Length: 163
Image (tube, rainbow, N blue to C red; front, top):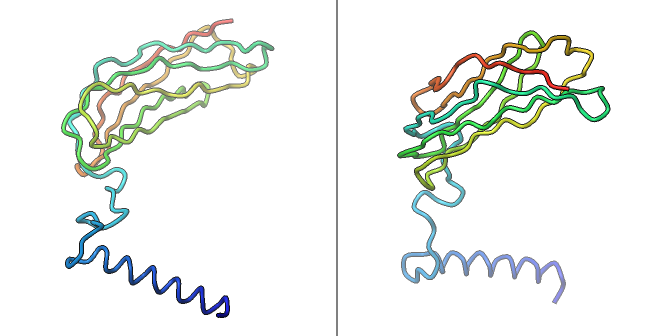
């Protein structure tokens, strides 16, 4: 038998076997009700989210060689209940005076209720831009779901320069 005919025969055999195995008469394999790969689209669904803690201070620390400063923001804690679909929580910090902005996005799956930690990764700034002992910024937590965008937290944050 030629290799091209063998490949066609094997492909046809697999298609027929899967059709029979997932069909109602045999039913050896089950396919989820919505089909395969039908997870909720990110940013859809809903969740009851309440901010437990949010930072009011952050640190801008000089790196080892003095040419860079790192902005480190403490974690926030949120309480999540009744999450359905895949709503998003975005944590962001903006420091207009330094032209700096950073954010992190979290998908709230239906897995569990409870407290979640929301972090913003450390960001770097050229040390030549840092010329003050402290800066004022804005820290925000925003929920995006079927109801649109809802601001959970939007408050000033003080950034202290160290080193």
